[in-house]
Length: 534
Image 1 (cartoon, rainbow, N blue to C red):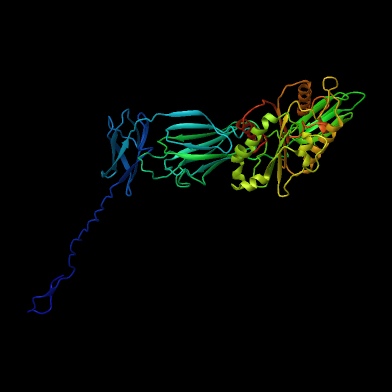
Image 2: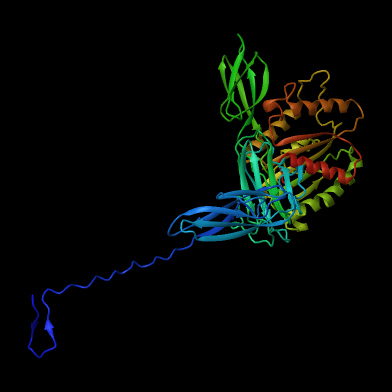
């Protein structure tokens, strides 16, 4: 097409079918690479010499992947995600790692591991702990094992109670209590920040509780009498500063088992008795006509399965251990002394024991009030003045059946000191061991009725201390009498004796002419054996 001019004189013209210009090429924007990040974790930063520590590189790359790892500080380069390092010297070593992503960018991190000297380990397995004992432990490293022997065959919750000793108790220690293959643990308890560089091993319970002080406790439920062994183990990987704990033993169900006197009465054969023992197992025993045996069984489980027999229930037998008994301001102690003259040499020592050593031991239970103690702990050398006592002579079973002297007393404990040549029960056991005088029968019946009238074990306790003075045949006869009553032998069983009564014990063969300290000690020992926590 030819040019078409607007006019002949115009410099402008319109060109038909113009050629378009070449398009402009716009480049894509340049993307910037995000470098990777990396940190290092360690199984511990304070190992002991020779321990192996695992180091792990925790790396990420937001716009790609990690393609390589390179560790330094080791004897030779390592290229894995994790490495194991160790040292045989006490030293601090720096380890680092470099990671590279798929774009060639890198990141690095480092960590310091401090190897420490292995502390001397202390293991002690000979620490015996009784109920109520308070243990004050000083610094150690390693383990200590406490044998909680006071628990014995008791059943229930065993409690280790940590106490405030008034000194620093921040260094973490782990406590484990074990019975019959079962273990409960505190984990490591103490302060989480205690001014040391050590790392706390798991289980780390330093955040709750934060110390080894009250009311932190560790318990285990002992559900059976056996096995009797209960242990507490303390473990410290770092120097323990101190801790203090008290062992609280369980009380025992006092109605678990009872004594039963069983007698075969079948005239045409033997009597087979069945009963349930303390562990719930069924037992059987065969007795001939007239044969008698003392057994311990769960209440109301004794029966004569074959032929005929007699069953007589006695006192609680406590095969699971004696229940704990407490002394308070309402406990009454009657200290009886045979005043026939045969114990004149012991009178002063026994009176001194009551007025001094026994008072020192018991006064705290009576609020440190001497007047209250003197009202509740009575020393009696003239029992004839007491209501209900036979005035014709001094018979200690008659004394023991005496009612309480103070109407406010909730338990009465009779401490009876008697000469083993005691003539009150004139029975010739050498010629007729089964000959029981009417005095004996009356007194034993009165005492048993008294024991049956109280509601709980511990409301009425009788302890007879037999002081041995071998002067003539009376001593031998009376010794036979005590032996038979204690063991239920020669017809002195069931309602005819006291061997089936847990509330009555005999302390045999006490030597004469002892000082007040001696009599005090045997008195406390006897009370403890009955379950008193003194």
